[in-house]
Length: 71
Image 1 (spheres, rainbow, N blue to C red):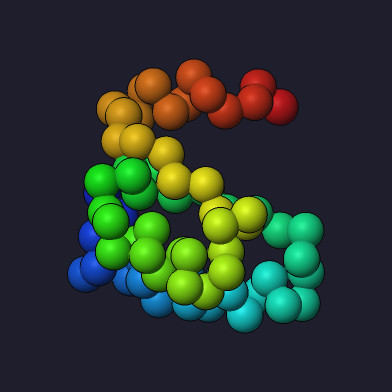
Image 2: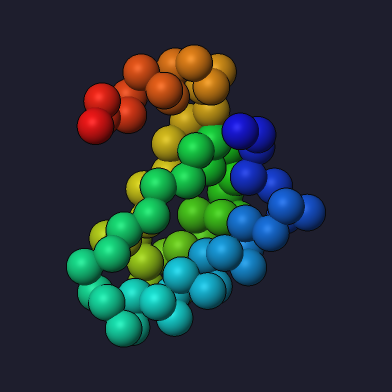
């Protein structure tokens, strides 16, 4: 897990996700470390994905693992 910066394709992922939402309006996406990137939030808003994408703050990986369901 690392920061969702542009070089790693996060903006392309969000654009692709916007296409997927058109086929399945019930899907969601959580972006770890996304709250640190204002341009990412702008793109999500521009594409109308605010109800489908959750931006989480950066945390050490072990903290994220504690948030995951046990199953």
